[in-house]
Length: 270
Image (cartoon, rainbow, N blue to C red; front, side, top):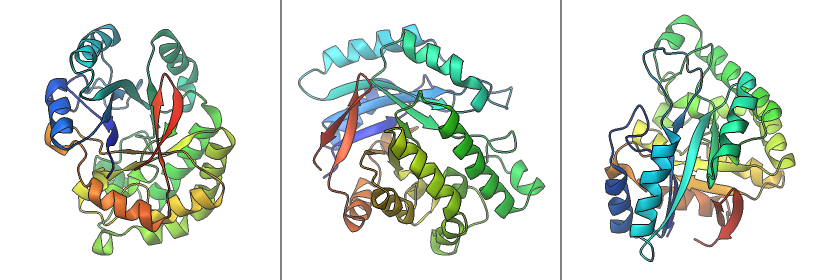
């Protein structure tokens, strides 16, 4: 059983209304022993109507109080999901230096200056071009930035393109494996981990993000650090579909997972 969920959002994120306490209670109900809040900071997010930022002092104050309250029942870690763009390196590094985060997910949420969640990018560009450009920008980000611990939902862009047959994005992965290989090699060289994100199942996909082809390739290239998160924006989605993730991990011969405490990876059994 996977007992650690290292990717969840609360009302500190602009796209969530979940109360942190409700997330914790949901985690306890599902038998988890460790969770990490990773609310969104996306500096310079291209949609001016959404501010993906929050008061970090308030964040630590509330989550630290909850961590103390639930001590002995569940381990509560305080993390962040940082939106990556090459020009943000210094700004992100300063934020992470100034606050004692346990964990930082580096995520790519922008391609062609928009989030692929919005349909506008798919209306303006061919799907294949969007997929390729997204991965090119991901490669640039992981090459330039060093401030993150794991790369979040590597093939996130495939959630929102043309619906895949049976929800499988294998063809997209295979067509772009040259870029994916380079991304994975950079992660491994920099001792960065790979996140397995179950939110894709809630988007009617057959696989988590990333596809099992990517997970296997990461291991083949010598990667070891794998974390798991449900990317919950509602309390009910904490640890969602972890049974399906476990099947994928076993099929890929993943022998252990990791969690981060004060930015240091710890190996855990599952």
